[in-house]
Each structure stands twice: as C-alpha cells, then as structure tokens.
Image (cartoon, rainbow, N blue to C red; front, side):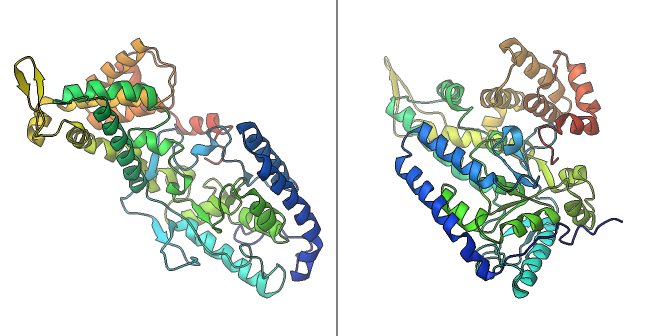
Length: 438
C-alpha cells in the first residue's frame, strides 16, 4: 500500500522530551571541549583541514541511514540548483515568477522560495508544532522545535552587481596605478584581457560564470530555507545545537519525508530535492510535475538576459576606466583625448559579431576547458556563422558546449545537430552519479 509522502513516514523511535536533554549534556561537554581545543590550535591550512575533518566525522555519526543528509561540497554537487542537466548556469526565471513569501519567518522580512517548496516547508513546520505541543520533541530547542526562517532566496542579479562593481573598481585602480592612459575601447580591451586571462577562472567577470562560481550561494536557486542564523565556521554550535540535540533524528526524518535534503556542513540549511516524490507531488499541483518541468518552467539560462546587456555593460566599464576627460595623452607633439562613444556610435563600430566573439573569448577565460587554442577559435568561428542566422540559438549552443564539453568535432553542422539531438533522459542517466537529485 502506497504511503502518503506528506506524512512523517519515517517514525521516530522514543521521541525525546525536555527531560531527555540532561542525558546528552555530558557528551555535549566532551565534544565542546574537543572543538575548543581544535579552535585554539587551528592556525594553518592543515589544522583547519583537520578541524573540518573532525567535524565531518562527528556530524555523520548516527546518520548513515539518511540519504538526504548531503555533502554539497562534493564534486559537482556544489552546483545543485545553479546549473541544469547539461551544466549550463541557470537562475530562477522572472517570467511568471514562481517565488512566494514564506510563512514562519523569524522577523518581518519577506523571505521567498519557489511555491511548491514553501508548501512543503509550511506542512513540515506544522508537524514540528504538533510534536512540540504533544511533548514528543523538546520544546525548548532553539531551532528544531518551532521552525523559523532566517534566510532563503537571494537575487543573483543583486549579488552579481555587488561583485562586478568591486571587480571593476579594482581593475580601474590597477590601470590608474600603472599609469595606463586609456583613450579608446581598443586600448581598454588590450589592458583588460591580460588580467582576465590570469584571474577570470577564480574571479568571474560575466554573470553566467558568477552563477556557477563559489561567489554565488545555493540560496539563489529558490530551493533553500535556513532555519538558523549561526556562523558557517561555528562547528561547536553545529554539534551542540543540531546533531547533539534530542530533536536531531526527528528533524532528519521530517526533512526526508517532505522532500528536503539537509546540508552536512550547514545542518540548518534545508534544500528541496526536486527529484523526490514529496516535492514532485507539490510541484504537480502548480503544473510542474516532473524534474524536467521544474527546470524548464521555474528557471531560465543565466546567459540569456545577461548577453542582451553585455554591449552596454562593456561600454559602461570603458567609460569608468578611460582617462579623465580633462586629461590628455601626448605622443610627440600630438595630443589625444579619451574617446567618447555614443550608444549608437559604439554599436556601429563594435557590432553584434564583434560582441559575440568578445563574449565567447571572455567565457573561455572563465571556464576550465580542455579545448586547444585552435579548437577554441574554430568553435567561436562556427558559432558566429550560426549567430548570423540565429543569434540566441548560437549563444545557447556555445554555452552548452562550453559548460558540458562533449566530443566537439569542429563543424557547424555537428554543433547544431548535437544541440538539437541531445536526449535529456539519456543525459539524466549519465549524470545521475554526479547530480543524483536532478
């Protein structure tokens, strides 16, 4: 007989009461002493690594039966909610937004997540209230008794604006310190490219690379709810207030029953598993009854809207970096003033094909790639030929190949055929070992 996924289907044995807390105090003190010692002595990277390893071993104790207790730092798992099945960066779509306000917030702020995620979280929070009132779980637990929200969806565009502002200000400062008097967009690119070649893999320049980077948190996915406001480095507090709590097993059970994963290194972080039956049941009620429908409906490619603004962004960056208008560059007896471009003149001089090639070159700087320089140039040339006919589709092709490198054979017909023929179901099976929750 099928079980209702909206019920707590993993029964907790011997649900704790407030009195049970005393039984674990000795163990908590021992663990806390150990972490205090490691905090005092953790100075170098090796010490920090050992401290994290100690935490991982302790937090995993007694959780072997919980497949929803997940290490999101493992391999490509850290990209969950930020890339699709072919590893192209994605963001929550602003078309017919599925974001809704969450009930049970910790303050007056309107935290948001995707609608079906909020429904399951609200029902899970109700279960905690019921168990607390019936004294089946510890009522005085600060976080795992009455669930409250401390963090949820974060707008990746807002985070990127902050990131790129700092990035550009730093580069402009470097240019000025080097007495680089930039008087044209060509000179600007000649100065910019060497820095991008050196730094872009670690410090992303474009929005798609930012979404895929460590600068962009999993909270941008709309799938995450955090029920505590602890510091990520506070390993003592994680052990004391979560895994050593008498409510810990019930928390893991409830999360699993409502389709949530729990982050091993941030145990207060609930992450919706969009391949789980409880989540898919709620998603079906809003016409997203499969994982692929969720990805297609709730998300859009990060590069799509960004690329439309790419020429304008590059012009703005040039205007920020160029020599001040009152300054001039003297070469012999010739005086050169920095060039001012109107939007129309800039678009005319640096047209769509120029911008397409510029974007592709920067994206290659940002991504780890096994392409040879010859293959890179040829791929860009082939995609540009396609872009003359279908610019949006050409960009999709480029990003798809760049982010999920398959056996590129260097022909336009091959690229288009590969783009049109990718079997998503087969791709899902191939990626199951890496992104099992997709």
